[in-house]
Image (cartoon, rainbow, N blue to C red; front, side, top):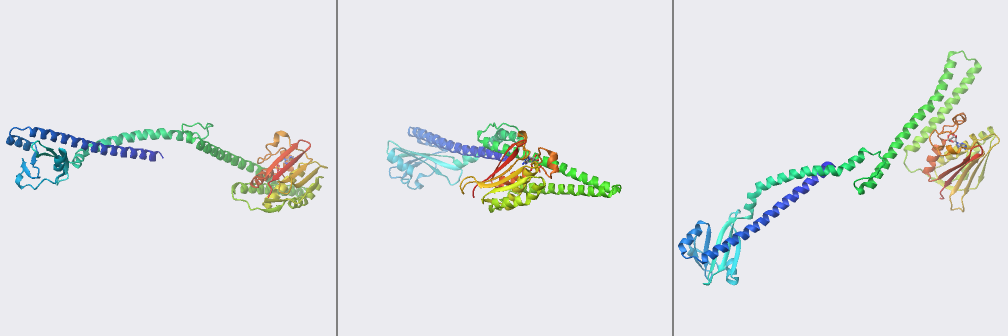
Length: 440
Ligand code: ADP
């Protein structure tokens, strides 16, 4: 970018310098022309007041000034350089015609060679004849050619100066951008260029997002490794005890049960981790269809009834057929996670009520509510339960087969469905989770 701006500035400066020089040459040539004409006019006046023809003619010849006298018919009656009798009639020459009609006339004619021009000045004398004074001078081309070397020298000098200036200017222009790149973490959006402010704040927020995501991923990897380690250590410990052969048959059975439980934990953990990274990595639109949320909730309740009964929790469903646009497998996951939590974090004799209903008439949003009378979530934890691996009571979560990823998956899926989730909970009294789906 620096190089490009630099090159552009130098190119602009060079062009400007070249145009200026051309203009100066043209103006200079015009001045020269006027000067020559003034000279010729003065010579004409002097010649008109001459005393001796021969002497003056010679002097003029020596100075390269040609004097010609033409009579009214255009016939040349005197010339100090050539034999005037051999000259053709001059009546048609513009400068002669002008002199006869207006008193004086002038013209510049290009010579046979490019580098010379002849300047003519003609004036009507009192005797009724026209006196023409002519002189050769350099043409505009020859003047230009003569000044060309010095022009090149000046041009080179100016280009060098402008290159240095351009470098300096470019550096000054670019500095705020470089400073921004070096201080992406700084929290101020102030800049020397107000036009850059929106761009800077966009880059900063993108940079912060990237840093946040990287940190989250790092934490996630560390957490996953930690979570995998615990069941694997148990499995390895049980296996070691069996291996030594000192365990009784009863113990072996107990250890085998321990191994199976921990292996199941590992599987669930790995499944949830895979699911989350799938949701993280795929930005594609999800495949959706029109689904009866009530029907989905009914099969989820069916599937979890045995679990609920085992824990002495009463699980029931109420509501009506409500259609939402969504991905079947994802919505099943949401329902499963929410109902499973409501059962697992409940007390024996407690209840879970799942309801599906439209918020108003048929065109309004659809509500899914899972309300339990369980242990509840203390206020200070409520904000964080959607974070990966965040658990209020770690041992209870683990002993009931939790991974700490369920609600993170739910949040992810609902965000993909443009659905809103709200949790109202009171420690010791129960939790109410409300999901609002936009109407079809
Ligand atoms: P887990 O696999 O541990 O259940 P989740 O992500 O599903 O993980 O939930 C995170 C935490 O939120 C749980 O560990 C639990 O402490 C709390 N939680 C979730 N749902 C409920 C609920 N219905 N009642 C009480 N606490 C809950």
